[in-house]
Length: 269
Image 1 (cartoon, rainbow, N blue to C red):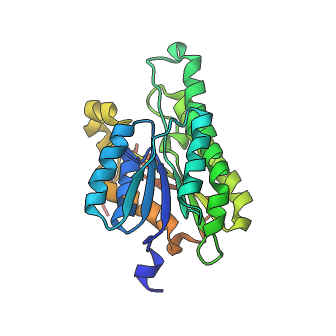
Image 2 (cartoon, helix red, strand yellow):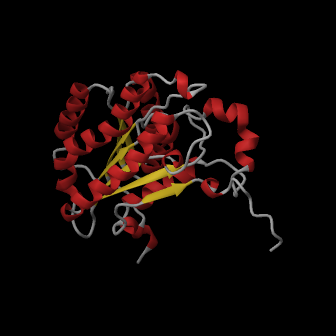
C-alpha cells in the first residue's frame, strides 16, 4: 500500500506515439521524469531528436527517438521490428497518442480524403501497433503487474464538437469503443487497455482554436482553465502503474468538467 510503489513507473519500458510534441510530449515527460525508458515516435525526426536531447538532460529516465510515419503500414511494421530488437525482454506500456484532425467551414466542403487520413491514423493504426507489439507487451505482463495500452481519444468522441470536424469526432468515438474491444480480448493475457479523453490542452492541434477562442473555451470549463502537462502525465502514470492494474476497458475524461460545463451551475452553495 506504499504510495511510491502503487504509482511507480521506474524502469518501465514505454512506447509513446506522437511523443515529441503536444499531449504526447506531456506524457513522455511524465514518464521520463519518473524513471521510465521511453521510446518516442512520429514522422518528424528533428522534433523527436530535440525532445530526446532535452529530456535526457533532465533524467532520471531515458528518451529514445524512433522516426516513423504511422500512416505507412510498412513503416509501422519496421517500427515494431526495431522495438523487438531493442527490447527483446518486452515492453510495459504502449501509449497510442498519434493523431490528426481536419476541419472545414461546412459539411458540404468536407472532403472524402479527410476520412481516409483520419480513420487510418487515428483508429486503424491504434489497432495495428497494438497488434504488432502484442508479443512484447505479453513478455512483461503478469497478474500482479499487467502491461498497459493507453489510447488517447478525445471528449469530441463523447459529444458533438462545436467545429466542423466529423471525421475527427467519429474517429475518436471509434478509438473509445476499440479500447473496450481490445480490453475484453487482452485482459486474460494480463494486458489492460484503457483510453483517455482529453479536453482542451495546449497542443499543436488546439493551437489555432485556443488562440481565437481561449476565453470562451475556459468560460465553459467548470475548473476555469485548460489542462496542464501534469494533468495529462498523471493520468497515464496512474493507468500504467500498480495503482491502475485493475482498471480495464474504461474511458477516462481529463477535461476539467468541460464535457458537462456548457451550462455552468451558478446556484449559491
